[in-house]
Length: 560
Image 1 (cartoon, rainbow, N blue to C red):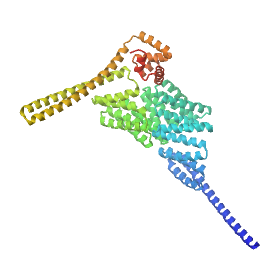
Image 2 (cartoon, rainbow, N blue to C red):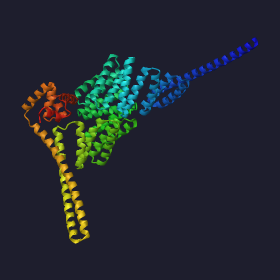
Image 3 (cartoon, rainbow, N blue to C red):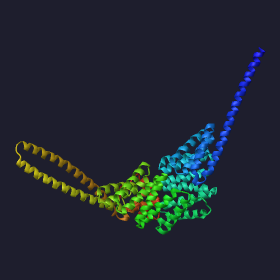
Image 4 (cartoon, rainbow, N blue to C red):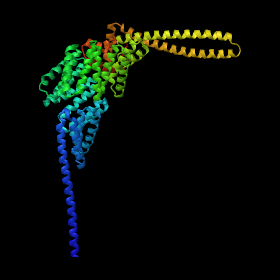
């Protein structure tokens, strides 16, 4: 019995030794794999800092990833996914950026690493913004902002707000873009984050320039210029030069603008910053177009399109296609112009870039008008006017009336041609009726009956069309009658409206000008305020009067 126990104890000891040896062996192998992966990862980081060695960095990161996966080290797997995403971002391959950062995001969520999750949210948002998928971009930016509030990561909070502003810029909401960038600028100044301060001041200047507030744009450009000398970041410098160029372009100082756009290209080429080069080429194309250098403008626009396609910047592609279409139209290359405009419209609709559509529809209107296609011209102009909400402006009414007159003339001529044709057919039918007897008489009656039904249908269609045109002209005539009202009567009625609907003094001024038939741009010039402020006042007036458009507002205040 004792011998049996000793023998069993010995077997147990051998078994335990084998298990321990095996565990130690696995642990040694894991440690070796991790050290090997750490070396590969470190080498990849070094290569990733050089713009010309991104491909080498990518190979090293992926080799490191294989070893980390073998050891199931979740934290290092997530980190490597992120660095692969950074490398693809540098190469401007945004589908891959989204793929790898989403993989990192999933793991960081599982291990509750909120700081790294916020970073991935930011990069995914950037990639979606550039691809034109703005709804997805908004979602990830706000997700990242919620995480940075928990982690107190001020730098990432600033980056997220700045990129959210860019996203609103892509969507055409410049006021919201300014708000986001001012928020980021506030925190950047608190921590003296110079690179971000320069970048944010430039973005804010661009947005003010977009809404034609050049005075504020110059103020923020001036603030950026104070710190740009101390910045080594080539992207920030390229952005600075491009913004200055756009400012001078708005002020119609074309030679100064060209100087800064060339400087943008030079700085961007040093780091292969394609987005900066493309932006400069688009602006150079616009300058050449204004200077009537059409061949040069066409060359710049095509360069911009090729660069933007290579980096997947859909919004940029659309803007460049519209620019190219305008250049081709000036050269009477109508078919090519329409081809590029169709591509721009398809991309805008597919990617939800609705802010580009008014410009596209207006250019369609111009092309069709030049080609005397008044029916299509009228359709496109109505699309444009609906998006711009400028039906009450005098300029719009004149253009609609002009198109309407030409369209009616064309329809009348068409009607005369139809009647002449019908008369000839009648004469032929009479001759046939005299020549043919008996059986042919039945056929003649059938033909007359068919013709009668056809004429009846056509007459009904023409009558309906005339009624529609008459109703449309009546609306325009009502607006014209309204504009003849005395200013004293208008002011008295607006005072009553203020008392009834609690309108402010500024809203009263805007409403008076709406009543006089002024457009949004004309109101802005008249009151010395920005276009976005005018739109805000009009929205407030509509809300307080509980109306949807200008005509309803005028009717409600008894102006018509």
